[in-house]
Amino acid sequence: MTDLSIDLGFMKLKNPVIAASGTFGYGIEFAPFIDLNHLGGFIVKGLYYSSREGNPPPRLVETSSGLINAIGLQGIGVKRFSEEILPCLIDYDTSIIINVCGEHEDEYAAVVDLLNHQPGISAYELNISCPNVKKDGKCPALDPETTYSVVKLVKKSSTRPIITKLSPNVTDITEIAFSAQEAGSDAVSLVNTFLAMAIDPNTRKPKLANILGGLSGPAIKPIALRMVYQAAGRLKIPVIGMGGICTGGDALEFLIAGARAVEIGTANFIDPEATVKIIDELDNFCRERKIGKLETIIGTMK
Amino acid sequence: MKKANQVIITDRKMWKDYVLLSLKSPQIASKALPGQFIMIRITPHSYPLLRRPFSIHAVEGESIAIFFQKSGIGTNILGLRKIGEMLDILGPLGNGFGLKGDFSHKKTVLIGGGRGIAPLFFLANSLADRKAEIRTFYGGKTSYDLPLKENFEANGLKVFCSTEDGSLGYKGLITDYFNLEMRQFRPDRIFACGPDAMLKTIADIAAIENIPAELSLESIMGCGIGACWGCVKRLKKDGVTGWFRICQEGPVIPADQIIWAEKDK
Ligand SMILES: Cc1cc2nc3c(=O)[nH]c(=O)nc-3n(C[C@H](O)[C@H](O)[C@H](O)COP(=O)(O)OP(=O)(O)OC[C@H]3O[C@@H](n4cnc5c(N)ncnc54)[C@H](O)[C@@H]3O)c2cc1C
Ligand SMILES: Cc1cc2nc3c(=O)[nH]c(=O)nc-3n(C[C@H](O)[C@H](O)[C@H](O)COP(=O)(O)O)c2cc1C
Ligand code: FES
Image 1 (cartoon, chains in turn orange, green):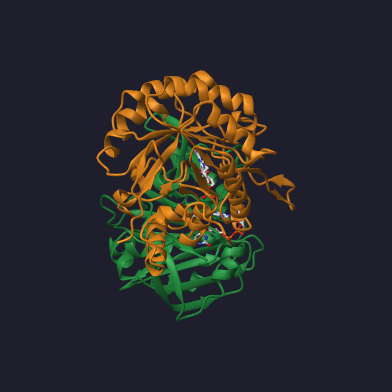
Image 2: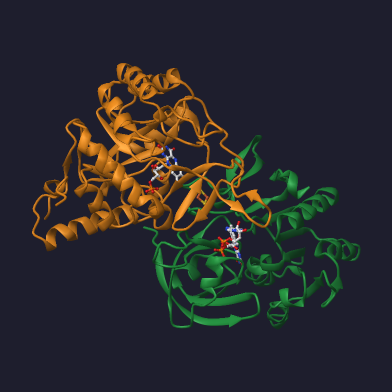
């Protein structure tokens, strides 16, 4: 048996494979398809303090090997989540991470305040990088100072580790990642989606009602990998990598580039079993090469 | 555990723009309800990336069939797949048409526009088993859009056809034809699938005539399993108005719950 476990310092994972926020529902949607206990962890859909309507459809458009979404974080709000959903999740033997959202700094803190009292949560992933909320795609993760101040405030309210989720829509990812680290973030995860759009040439109309959306899937993998590599090179805190991972081989690229864990997003839509298949593929990779501990491969690019 | 399955294509029929594929899937055939759908992976590679949704068109023994219109990259690739090849499918998904209660001798109208006929064949056969009195209205732009007419008739199902160019049956919209025929045959129940504009007209007629109608809606689906929240339509359900996931609440929705978009009005 290969040891697939990963130590993030503040949190131990069974294996490095975490289902990414917004692509895994509230987790329970996948219980008919996979044994959630096999996962390194899963991150629930982004939660605001209040419920949210989301954007009008069309919310999705497929492009070359990619998906642009403008869901707009439709959701039930943190109160209903903790009353109705969380109790169904806490018995799973896996790391449950909550994706925390906010219209402004105080809302992030309010979500965390409410969840601090709830059992069964391993960490908070601070979503300061969703491009679908403001019309122009603006979010705190575009600016090092705003990033610093949100992370600092939430870290103060939180009784749990904070993973700051970064946006790729910046000139220098290492600068923002460094801000998150300096503000006390326990880890960073990257990347969220790339601000993108598509137009129907026949009607000249945008293919998304929101015009702009976020691009995910295999199309973004090489750029995401580059950003993870750059961030891991600059930071002391762990980096969790994602962007277009569909196979064990894809996950290995991120680990070798320096990510200590990976998140699987869009691949869950194509195959609800994607996460467990990737775990199996990592296990096979190690066995075939007689690698006893997967962790030893992290950051070993030659 | 529910799983995506590799199934073999056992039969294929092709028309100009439409394709009918039979797939051997005992697992889905034994569970499927009329109105449910499956998600098909077009390729194991990354383009086209997402699965595509298709209604279950027929169930026969251990096989199911899908009937689709070639309307883009995915459906065109699917139209090239041959007998003996494997397809990766996930299902059955969604709720299906409401078939509780007694249909015996109940006047039931089915209305399909273009590829919207797909789920109605399975439905019609099920309703025939329940001894319903069925009339199927099948509309398209031209006679080329009505390839399934004979299949219905071969099963003893009455079909009322319309084409916009008059090349087959009534000349005009299928909803106009239905409205006309309703004077002689006022249905107790309506089931329909097709473009939103057609469904909106049917919802209006059903509301005025006070006939319960169930409509199978289309929407761009990222996953089909409730995870992406991409497939929403505006509904009013149990007093709540909002964006509901069509893959979970539908694809079949009672007409009086649907809040139509401006473009459909
Ligand atoms: C529950 C459900 C059941 C369906 N059953 C059938 C069926 O039995 N037979 C059939 O022919 N079609 C059916 N459809 C529609 C079918 O899924 C789409 O035509 C197909 O996904 C288009 O894929 P494509 O790659 O060929 O098109 P693309 O190249 O992706 O797009 C071509 C055009 O189709 C539109 N489109 C993309 N996805 C969908 C979608 N899911 N629904 C409607 N339009 C879409 C795009 O906006 C674009 O205008 C169903 C849709 C749903 C939601
Ligand atoms: C439909 C959809 C919804 C998403 N919702 C969220 C969200 O609520 N919070 C978040 O932090 N990221 C969200 N994301 C971003 C993903 O978690 C992930 O960062 C991104 O999709 C890149 O990974 P991938 O290429 O593997 O999908 C969403 C992505 C998609 C496609
Ligand atoms: S298609 Fe993904 S939620 Fe309905």
